[in-house]
Image (cartoon, rainbow, N blue to C red; front, side):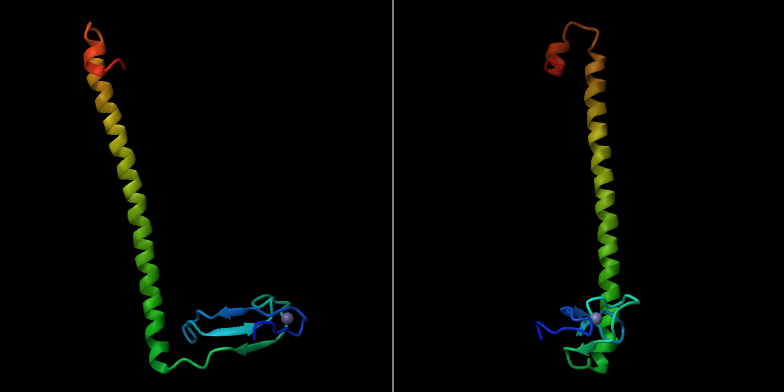
Length: 113
Ligand SMILES: [Zn+2]
């Protein structure tokens, strides 16, 4: 199964289907599978998926993708929050230094900044 050749004479890779009808089912097809100039070589590696799995797996995949999207949005929000926090920290330090900036105690209150 590892070295099957399609009708083009090229090595045919094992690919996993993620369609709603055959989620996770592996097949071997033309190395150009999905392209208009692919040959018609195709065979399933895995047996057919049972009706229950066919009904459940697509919903689980959609839910997983939705949760991954939510994680991406939360991580983006976390980066914005951290950048804002750093900017406020810098502004806070700058405002403390600028209050004492005209006096002789600059070095003492800002640590020489
Ligand atoms: Zn081919």
